[in-house]
Image (cartoon, rainbow, N blue to C red; front, side, top):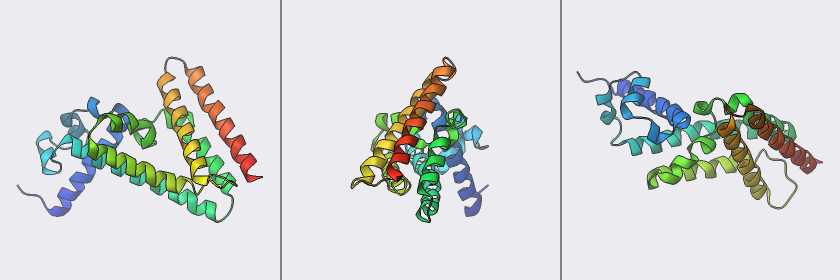
Length: 200
């Protein structure tokens, strides 16, 4: 039985949402198409009605994850443009490095969860990831306190530090929770101190 265009579009969205979450939680190669479709509440055979390959889905899921992430940062940037940039930045850093963020990779930063996959996969995935990072950096630059002539470079440095801290903490959590928490606290403290100094 054929389904309507609206139903087909809704099913595709369900597959994308499931893939975006599961790929960030487990990695692209660790998730079979059958498991992904089950998580989306659909049959395995329906996959190819929406995507030609898992690689095509991976690129689409990457774009979807970044679209959500960039939208969140753009909203923060809008608030920062109205004043209180330091407060917006501090809130961002605290949320990014929160243990709750670390422990929920399926809904957290795609840069910290999909970077390794992007490096190992084909050009479509890499292109989606690189475009997502570029857009994220453009938005993030608007909230990082800076008095220098290179605000973009400062934003890239801060963002790379955040991603590294989250990745290290996530890798250590569960076997050395004290150290995992120490990484988050140490990096958060350093970034907030630097941001405060820039705003003075």
